[in-house]
Length: 122
Image (cartoon, rainbow, N blue to C red):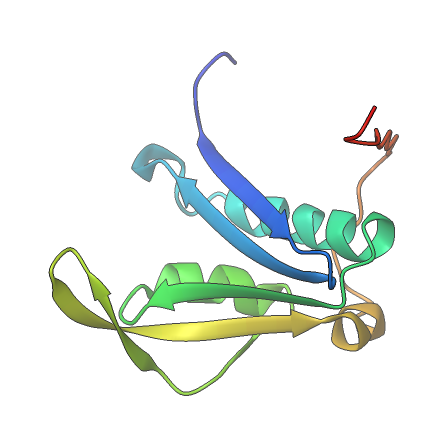
């Protein structure tokens, strides 16, 4: 359809460390869309962009978002406080490294793919 479902981003630095962020509309929760989208971004980052490590942060209490990452093999470190909206809110720092991603037999793979990377200098 032409409905806006959500958004996902991947920022990758020159050292191969990436940051993933995502949002999905309430009407589309619980359908597996976000889990699949994160899995596909993981695939893009590791299989095509040379990432070595991905990270994301989830506010403590957002269990559904944490599960999205965990279903894709991400692990959680100890929660830490961050300042958000003028208040401190604990967050779960989540990470996925290349070795753990490669070791997963159940990782998300695209049904078909065609990746065309353009040199940003051209």
